[in-house]
Length: 309
Image (tube, rainbow, N blue to C red; front, side):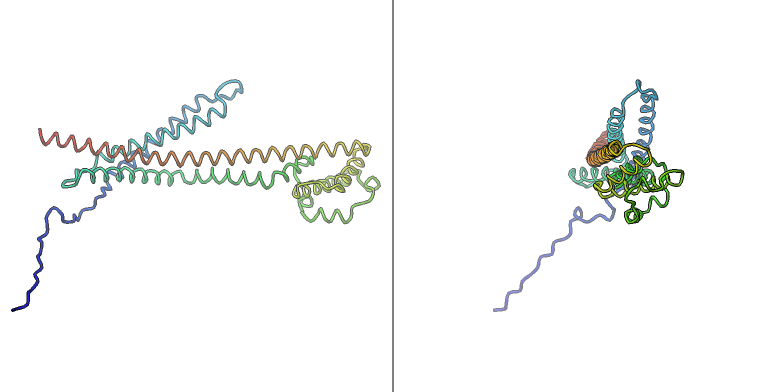
């Protein structure tokens, strides 16, 4: 008996299942929607700026408060982002050509993807146009915050020392330790009078305050010596000089506390702004995708009515 020969059945290809050579991404409607969204954003931002200027007043008793302006600006930016995303996404869906031999679910997916791409392109364009300004604002805020955190004490000490502009010798960090080496036992007996003596005493006091601010506290020896310098320069008694030194150091501590509080407030505001901005962009992307799906569906429905008619 001859061996059985297995046969393989060849299934002819189905025309409807062949892969299309055309891309499913229509860049023309995407670019058009992105440009529309970008232009709408700029127009609405200018409108918001005009409305903001209309409620600002140079008089303290008139106009909106700073908090009201900040909240209004944040809300307006969110509204602008959403309206622009909706307009750009809708036009993206309406301007694309009709996809034939494509399932309804696939059409819906492509429309939402086109709306998302239009939103992404518009966002990148705006970042490119306003990137330098945004970088300057964000970088300036970060730098200001870090400066307040790290150098507020130094600035407060320099201001409390009563010197508008520190000399090169006063800004020298090692000058404090040099002063400690040659610190006289009785400052009253040293030359603290006259222009040169006054300048030397002021520079020495400045270096003490700067070093103490950097370390976070004023040592007992430095506090006593400052009181002696004040007594020698002003003629006050030792007790009154010590009271004046304590009052100035208290003002320095208050300035440091206010600076840290301002830095913490700026940090919290930056964190809130970043989170709200990210959430707003996410919602804007969703709005653009849904608007594109709505626009594409309306475009197909109107074309079907035209064909039937």
